[in-house]
Image (tube, rainbow, N blue to C red):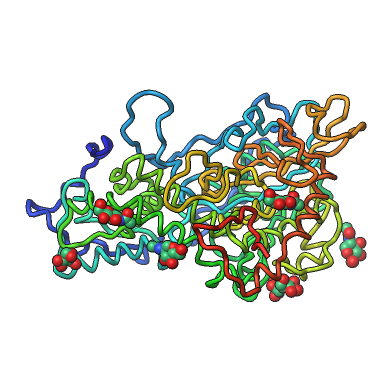
Length: 559
Ligand SMILES: *[C@@H]1O[C@H](CO)[C@@H](O)[C@H](O)[C@H]1NC(C)=O
Ligand SMILES: *[C@@H]1O[C@H](CO)[C@@H](O)[C@H](O)[C@H]1NC(C)=O
Ligand SMILES: *[C@@H]1O[C@H](CO)[C@@H](O)[C@H](O)[C@H]1NC(C)=O
Ligand SMILES: *[C@@H]1O[C@H](CO)[C@@H](O)[C@H](O)[C@H]1NC(C)=O
Ligand SMILES: *[C@@H]1O[C@H](CO)[C@@H](O)[C@H](O)[C@H]1NC(C)=O
Ligand SMILES: *[C@@H]1O[C@H](CO)[C@@H](O)[C@H](O)[C@H]1NC(C)=O
Ligand SMILES: *[C@@H]1O[C@H](CO)[C@@H](O)[C@H](O)[C@H]1NC(C)=O
């Protein structure tokens, strides 16, 4: 079936191939632009454009009080908007919630608010439970939308198209006709315009929800990121949203932790964990999604082949076309590749990413918990206000051993990281309800799946830990502990969905708001730190279980 959406797509007439429909010689070639255009004259003459201070007359500038919408509003503000992206549609027969293609791109789509029901707490929401008071918040967020990784499938597909176009030529018709004049307009690694907006918006949202905690600071906040360009840019855009573009540079300290081989970094831990990069544990995610791709795209490859001669498509090419839909949309606002695929094919794509993360960075990977445990050590240090003294994982002792670069008394912590790291950290945190129903099969989509990367690690995915104080008398959740006086609790909110903590020792008692007594959580995490054998999982020469017999569900090699 041709998706209805395709009927709307047309090529600009000037570019449309003549009747023969054969590809232009430039099809598949890579375009890039520099701004300002090198030929442009760039004037720096401040005489003509004095800045606001020089001009003066700013009008009245009184400030208002900090907001705390996470406690004061009756409901949480949710993120459901994809502006300015044009979200692709699949045919919709009219009952139930329409399938949303843009929410089936795993780690390659924008983040949207997740309903807590997706994680098993249908009545919970991100608002501070009534009667409780917000004490502290810890935010871990992913960078915004980016171009593809250097040398990855979308660029290879473009090279294949260009090779065919500039060689003996190809000819595409029907839904693939656009390929005759398609060019590759994506860069690599860095943020797209949408990718700048997402962390900016997250920063604005965080100020509105948690701004009141700024009143409690005694020094300027230290927020952390890693050294990659997109990571620094994301952190700065977050800060610009949070503090404002005129003020952010003087409002906080940005810590930039080196992300490169040879350096310890809890926000890019693979460099401190050799097994995560090599044949021991590094290939599992790719193998799992690779096997599934051969299955779910087998018929699709034949279907699309009908529309092209002179270029033999493989399942890998077709997979790259699905990735191009996501990447072009988040970079260029729209992609003609999106209309090529059905709902079932998008579900297959989404699942391929679930497999890649489950076996590559999540519950099924033997070095995943080890990679996330450094952040857990930092979290425990912050929650207990106790300096770290042993640096036996991916922590950097120079930075984390210093109370200026690793402060322990901030009401707000903000760390920027990568998708795979969020997956490893929630594995280290033992969020086992997300791994319920066991290992993911590599040959089919299981009926009851709880692990979805589109909920865990989309662009600008955000994990928030709220520390709240609840008096025993008005505790909304008397079942969570035996506290008789006011006590501190913690809970975790992943993309606005509250996560049950019942897989963590000492937090087993179910709580409808996802709360665990802070002391119990800390005890559980201290046990978890003991349980995760960093040296073995990251350095030992072991053979991980075969993918079809991988019973690992908490990211540790079974010894
Ligand atoms: C820790 O970070 C500091 C500051 O960037 C750097 O000089 C040092 O090499 C890092 N150490 C490790 C082991 O990564
Ligand atoms: C399928 O998985 C096996 C390991 O179980 C791996 O050797 C093989 O390369 C994978 N196939 C693909 C296409 O990724
Ligand atoms: C792909 O489809 C063909 C024809 O239906 C079939 O023979 C082949 O086994 C399939 N391959 C996979 C990996 O499913
Ligand atoms: C495509 O595959 C067919 C059948 O295997 C082969 O005859 C043809 O040469 C291939 N075409 C290209 C462009 O590789
Ligand atoms: C870096 O990590 C290694 C491996 O865990 C650890 O042995 C070392 O002490 C760390 N170095 C620093 C400076 O933190
Ligand atoms: C930070 O560490 C220095 C040196 O150990 C110590 O003198 C200072 O009191 C510490 N500051 C705080 C706020 O803990
Ligand atoms: C973490 O989860 C695993 C798997 O469910 C469990 O065996 C282990 O006891 C848990 N550890 C802690 C400290 O919660």
